[in-house]
Amino acid sequence: MIRYIRRAAAFCLLLLVALLVNAARVQLFEADELDDNPANRRAAIVRYDQPRGNILVGDRPVTGSKETGEQLSFERTYLHGPLYAPVTGYASQTYGTTLIENAEDAVLSGTDSLLAPLPFWNEFTRGRQPGGDVVTTIKASMQQAAYEGLRGRRGAVAALDPSTGAILALVSTPSYDPERLSGTGAAVTDAWSRLNGSTSMPMLNRAIRQTYPPGSTFKIVTAAAALDDRVVTDADAATDTPSPYVLPGTRTALPNEARGCENASLADAIRVSCNTVMAHLGVEVGLDGMVGTAEKFGFNDTGLRIPSGVARSNFDTDMSEDQLALSSIGQFNTTATPLQMAMVASAVANGGDLRRPHLVDRVTTNTGDTVRQEGSESYERPMNPATAVQLQRMMVEVVENGTGSNAAIDGVRVGGKTGTAQHGVDNSGLPYAWFISWAQAPDSGRPAVAVAVVVEDAAADRADISGGGSAAPIARAVMEAALEE
Image: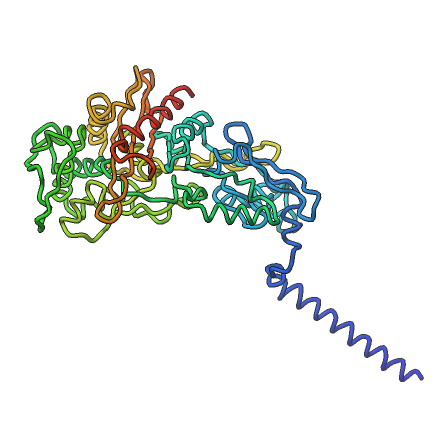
């Protein structure tokens, strides 16, 4: 009898060991796979069992959380959702996160180790803290001015503080309300389908994720290259440029929309926007010089983050001379985001020093204690300070006596550059209206803001689309708001 008891005990011990081995296998070797299994809802339940931290503009949250009374306890809400959607992105229980909601997800969800009371606290406890807050660099009045200026037309605005690189406004229209995507269920999937199926693409962040031919606004980059490379030594001296200008190696004549461009000086070519002079100067600078200058401004950078990723602005590195001529006036394959062109204006305004753009000012705990502070950081020096001074003078002339008069502000030093970018097969598409600018108050030693505006409205009459007519008034409104801060 005792022998049978011993055998039963040994068998039970064997079963216990097998159970422990299997538990260890599951916990040590299969835990990650089970956590990532789409059928496992535990991670989602934990993720949404507490309110998400907030994204702030100034000292006011533009996000919130509400209790659902369901298994996923808390759902994201947005204040003025369409206005701030290009900044916040969305946090959806169904479709994940984008923009700041994605880039700062660890902070907002409470899993970032910066929020823990002690180093490695979260790792030891396998827990998380209350969601932290992300304070943006956005100025509410400037964001509102840009949004109202676009009036729902397809387009975008990006505004920077030239001295720090802080992004003061980031608007894309038409926009959408990210709260419609926050939860789960048929209403959310229907909203997702409608938004993604819309021909106006309201979920496209045109300010940082869409590139356009920059047209004549790119002439500022070409002018910087010509002055720095000493192709032009006197900006007020006549250039040897015929009008029209025959593109090198072709029989194609490049015309001007403006008058008085034959042999015009660089300063006059910027003021009235002469295609011929700037295309000729780009060829004189040469491919290497133009590529080098464009890349110092930020073109061809695939790693720019603000902290969300920014689409690469393009300036080709392998071109024939006729292609280089067109690229030097912002056509051919040259493309830019509105943020990129704001960077161009910012570098000029800041004496040739381009600061790295950033959208987050600081990160705090839910009680307001700062755990990370973003500082001003140099991105590049795309031009000599003396060149920047000359370009400032030329851009002021554009506003005071040239094509950008609609951006003028009484008593304020404003520099600008218009652009009307052709696109489509044989330039059949309606041109994009561009305006880049900066403003400096008379009692200030530094510029207040640099702005880029692009308007792409297929419903407008062709004659009504111009950088000076469509985009400059929006830039002026944003600059006025910046000067009132």
